[in-house]
Length: 114
Length: 131
Image 1 (tube, rainbow over the protein chains, first blue to last red):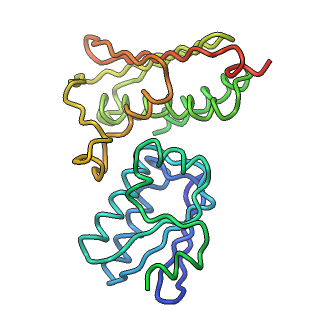
Image 2 (image 1 turned 135 degrees about the vertical axis):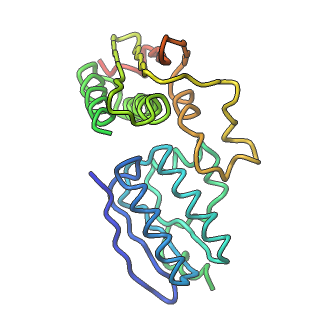
């Protein structure tokens, strides 16, 4: 299943609800474009919801890292929400789990931006 | 990328037919997919005139996969360690690391032209195959 991205705002945080796969050719470009569009609009607080993402490959991991570094370079923040076990396992394996701010519930994630 | 999807589908079918534990199969299919992506993207540089050749054999004891491309090859020694502090924020360079994490043996062989990677996973009697 390809990646779908739904965007919403809550308390000054832009939330991207992702669903599907983040892989080369099946979502990594969509994620990159979505993040770049938000950054170009001056959005500073971005929360990526991964609760419906059941697969991420090395390209998808690269896009998450790029989102993080692109945001940092523009004094913005990208944080992650609701990792599925499979995505969490891959982030831990690659040590990226320690790079990102990761939350299990939305309220805590939103509060962390304040 | 159609060839990558096909390789992934065939690997999934093979694991299911062999009765591999689903969690284990997920990792192995991911490793096979990463190898196919490397072959298409880095090996063949997306050249539609070039092919990748994939073989998969699975028994109760072992899974063996080979993925060959028709590219110019690469220097394994020059691959950066994706876990090193200076590389952790790189956007690329995690594919072979993931493959090595999921398989017991990962060996590269230079072809003329191209590169072949051979992946081997040996199943423990109690964890690999469910029956």
